[in-house]
Length: 164
Image 1 (tube, rainbow, N blue to C red):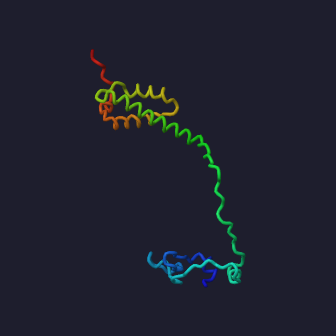
Image 2 (cartoon, rainbow, N blue to C red):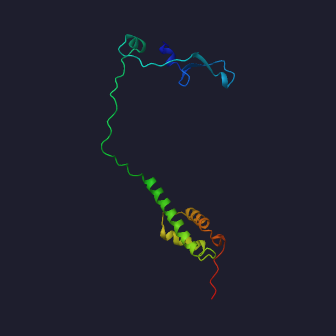
Image 3 (cartoon, one colour):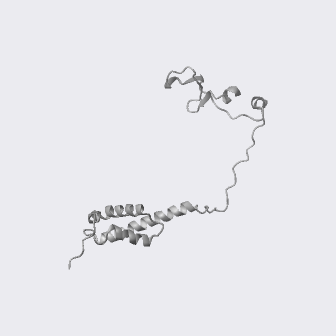
Protein backbone atom coordinates (compact mmCIF):
# COMPACT_ATOMS: atom_id res chain seq x y z
CA UNK A 1 0.00 0.00 0.00
CA UNK A 2 1.32 3.41 -0.96
CA UNK A 3 -0.04 6.11 1.35
CA UNK A 4 -2.49 8.64 -0.03
CA UNK A 5 -0.11 11.46 0.92
CA UNK A 6 2.34 10.19 -1.72
CA UNK A 7 -0.31 10.20 -4.47
CA UNK A 8 -1.40 13.73 -3.63
CA UNK A 9 2.10 15.21 -3.15
CA UNK A 10 3.36 17.29 -6.09
CA UNK A 11 6.94 15.98 -5.77
CA UNK A 12 5.85 12.45 -6.71
CA UNK A 13 4.82 11.12 -10.12
CA UNK A 14 3.90 7.74 -11.58
CA UNK A 15 5.63 6.37 -14.69
CA UNK A 16 2.98 4.13 -16.26
CA UNK A 17 5.45 2.56 -18.73
CA UNK A 18 7.65 1.09 -15.95
CA UNK A 19 5.28 1.10 -12.98
CA UNK A 20 7.71 3.21 -10.95
CA UNK A 21 6.88 5.94 -8.43
CA UNK A 22 9.37 8.79 -8.91
CA UNK A 23 10.23 11.73 -6.68
CA UNK A 24 11.75 15.05 -7.74
CA UNK A 25 15.44 15.22 -6.78
CA UNK A 26 16.11 18.52 -4.95
CA UNK A 27 19.89 17.99 -5.39
CA UNK A 28 19.72 17.38 -9.14
CA UNK A 29 22.80 18.43 -11.13
CA UNK A 30 21.65 17.52 -14.62
CA UNK A 31 18.80 16.26 -16.70
CA UNK A 32 19.51 12.59 -15.97
CA UNK A 33 19.15 12.77 -12.18
CA UNK A 34 16.03 14.95 -11.97
CA UNK A 35 14.01 12.06 -10.55
CA UNK A 36 14.67 9.44 -7.87
CA UNK A 37 12.92 6.04 -7.97
CA UNK A 38 11.07 5.45 -4.70
CA UNK A 39 8.94 2.39 -5.60
CA UNK A 40 9.67 0.02 -8.46
CA UNK A 41 7.15 -2.02 -10.43
CA UNK A 42 4.03 -0.70 -8.73
CA UNK A 43 0.85 -2.46 -9.83
CA UNK A 44 -2.31 -0.41 -9.79
CA UNK A 45 -5.49 -2.15 -8.69
CA UNK A 46 -8.99 -0.80 -8.78
CA UNK A 47 -10.09 -0.41 -5.15
CA UNK A 48 -12.87 -2.65 -3.90
CA UNK A 49 -15.55 -0.30 -2.54
CA UNK A 50 -17.02 -3.06 -0.38
CA UNK A 51 -13.92 -3.23 1.80
CA UNK A 52 -13.44 -1.05 4.81
CA UNK A 53 -9.89 -0.23 3.79
CA UNK A 54 -11.18 1.87 0.90
CA UNK A 55 -13.20 4.18 3.12
CA UNK A 56 -10.32 4.50 5.60
CA UNK A 57 -7.81 5.28 2.89
CA UNK A 58 -9.84 7.83 0.91
CA UNK A 59 -12.28 9.18 3.51
CA UNK A 60 -15.27 9.04 1.23
CA UNK A 61 -17.69 6.90 -0.67
CA UNK A 62 -16.78 5.27 -3.96
CA UNK A 63 -18.04 6.92 -7.13
CA UNK A 64 -20.96 5.08 -8.70
CA UNK A 65 -20.75 4.78 -12.47
CA UNK A 66 -23.90 5.16 -14.53
CA UNK A 67 -22.40 3.54 -17.61
CA UNK A 68 -22.27 5.12 -21.06
CA UNK A 69 -24.26 8.21 -21.86
CA UNK A 70 -27.01 7.69 -24.46
CA UNK A 71 -26.13 8.63 -28.01
CA UNK A 72 -28.19 11.42 -29.55
CA UNK A 73 -30.73 9.93 -31.92
CA UNK A 74 -31.05 12.92 -34.20
CA UNK A 75 -28.13 14.31 -36.10
CA UNK A 76 -27.49 17.84 -34.95
CA UNK A 77 -26.91 20.51 -37.55
CA UNK A 78 -23.78 22.57 -37.03
CA UNK A 79 -24.29 26.18 -36.01
CA UNK A 80 -24.17 28.73 -38.81
CA UNK A 81 -20.72 30.23 -39.38
CA UNK A 82 -19.93 33.52 -37.72
CA UNK A 83 -19.97 36.69 -39.80
CA UNK A 84 -16.18 36.77 -39.85
CA UNK A 85 -15.96 33.17 -41.11
CA UNK A 86 -18.65 33.79 -43.73
CA UNK A 87 -16.81 36.91 -44.93
CA UNK A 88 -13.52 35.01 -45.12
CA UNK A 89 -15.19 32.22 -47.11
CA UNK A 90 -16.59 34.81 -49.52
CA UNK A 91 -13.16 36.40 -49.95
CA UNK A 92 -11.52 33.02 -50.60
CA UNK A 93 -14.24 32.18 -53.13
CA UNK A 94 -13.67 35.52 -54.88
CA UNK A 95 -9.90 34.97 -54.93
CA UNK A 96 -10.29 31.53 -56.52
CA UNK A 97 -12.83 32.82 -59.05
CA UNK A 98 -10.53 35.71 -59.97
CA UNK A 99 -7.61 33.34 -60.45
CA UNK A 100 -9.70 31.08 -62.72
CA UNK A 101 -10.88 34.12 -64.72
CA UNK A 102 -7.29 35.35 -65.18
CA UNK A 103 -6.10 31.86 -66.19
CA UNK A 104 -8.78 31.79 -68.89
CA UNK A 105 -7.71 35.19 -70.25
CA UNK A 106 -4.01 34.32 -70.16
CA UNK A 107 -4.52 30.89 -71.73
CA UNK A 108 -6.13 32.56 -74.76
CA UNK A 109 -3.03 34.69 -75.31
CA UNK A 110 -0.02 33.30 -73.41
CA UNK A 111 2.62 34.98 -75.60
CA UNK A 112 1.07 38.42 -75.90
CA UNK A 113 -0.55 40.46 -73.14
CA UNK A 114 -3.90 41.85 -74.31
CA UNK A 115 -4.84 43.84 -71.19
CA UNK A 116 -2.88 45.92 -68.72
CA UNK A 117 -2.73 45.08 -65.03
CA UNK A 118 -4.66 48.31 -64.32
CA UNK A 119 -7.47 47.36 -66.75
CA UNK A 120 -7.72 43.85 -65.36
CA UNK A 121 -7.89 45.22 -61.81
CA UNK A 122 -10.70 47.59 -62.79
CA UNK A 123 -12.65 44.72 -64.34
CA UNK A 124 -11.99 42.50 -61.31
CA UNK A 125 -13.33 45.22 -59.01
CA UNK A 126 -16.58 45.23 -61.00
CA UNK A 127 -16.85 41.42 -60.89
CA UNK A 128 -16.04 41.06 -57.17
CA UNK A 129 -16.83 44.38 -55.45
CA UNK A 130 -15.96 44.51 -51.75
CA UNK A 131 -14.76 40.88 -51.67
CA UNK A 132 -11.46 41.07 -53.57
CA UNK A 133 -8.62 43.29 -52.40
CA UNK A 134 -5.89 44.62 -54.67
CA UNK A 135 -3.37 42.41 -52.88
CA UNK A 136 -5.56 39.34 -53.52
CA UNK A 137 -5.90 40.35 -57.17
CA UNK A 138 -2.12 40.56 -57.51
CA UNK A 139 -1.71 37.15 -55.86
CA UNK A 140 -4.33 35.65 -58.19
CA UNK A 141 -2.59 37.21 -61.18
CA UNK A 142 0.80 35.76 -60.16
CA UNK A 143 -0.76 32.33 -59.60
CA UNK A 144 -2.46 32.48 -63.00
CA UNK A 145 0.83 33.41 -64.71
CA UNK A 146 2.58 30.47 -63.02
CA UNK A 147 -0.24 28.05 -63.84
CA UNK A 148 -0.53 29.01 -67.51
CA UNK A 149 3.13 29.75 -68.18
CA UNK A 150 2.07 33.04 -69.80
CA UNK A 151 5.36 34.84 -69.20
CA UNK A 152 4.37 37.73 -71.49
CA UNK A 153 1.95 38.79 -68.75
CA UNK A 154 4.83 39.37 -66.32
CA UNK A 155 6.33 42.19 -68.39
CA UNK A 156 5.66 45.73 -67.22
CA UNK A 157 4.22 48.60 -69.20
CA UNK A 158 1.23 48.87 -71.48
CA UNK A 159 0.43 45.94 -73.77
CA UNK A 160 1.49 46.22 -77.38
CA UNK A 161 -1.19 47.57 -79.66
CA UNK A 162 -2.26 45.27 -82.50
CA UNK A 163 -0.73 46.32 -85.83
CA UNK A 164 -3.07 46.77 -88.80
